[in-house]
Amino acid sequence: MLTNLLKHRLVKWVLIGLIVIVVLFSFKTSILQGLSSFLVIAHPLEKADAIVVLGGENGERVYSASNLYKKGYAPLIILTGGNLAWRLSEVDVMKKQALFYGIPASKIITENKSLSTLENAKFIMPILKERGIEKIILVTSPYHMRRAYQTFNKQLRKEKIDVIAAPVPPNKYTTYNPNRWWERHEDKQFVIMEYIKLFSYFVKRYI
Image (cartoon, rainbow, N blue to C red):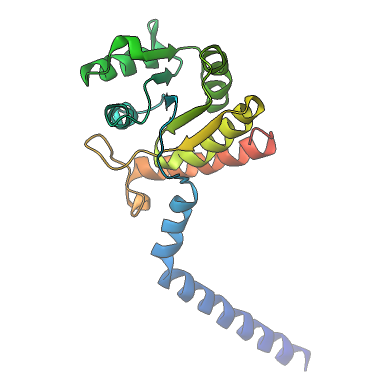
């Protein structure tokens, strides 16, 4: 009697397991796309006092910010990122790119000490306060935007500075594909590492 009952339960859970596997497989693409979509926060664009561009990119962020500047969304670009190697910082490279796209040097401000998203937010605070900036457009890669926005929003709202999230749209520099990110090794690293960092920031109450 007991043996038959155990067999019945085993068959039941095996069937449930198979159904779950079939459902997950059927909706695999939607689930994986949902994981990448969750990382993105995007606000309607509006004019601001400055465009803040985060380092850690391959050119896509500065390119996007330069386009926003040329469209008149803000009169100033603030680049933030720390050291790379050989006394060269991320913002040195980013500034050269912005200049190449025709952004006047007088309209570019750099912060070259920060080594994390949290430090990006903290270290540009004096710049924003000194210039009386009340609203910024935050530019970073789509997979990085949720953590970046929540970090900046938590830090900057103390000074009543509004943050508009403007994730980089596809452009000639982008390689990340949010719709098929699991098919490319680099994209998988972006998403997986971002979830780990997002959890870490949540636990540490940075966001």
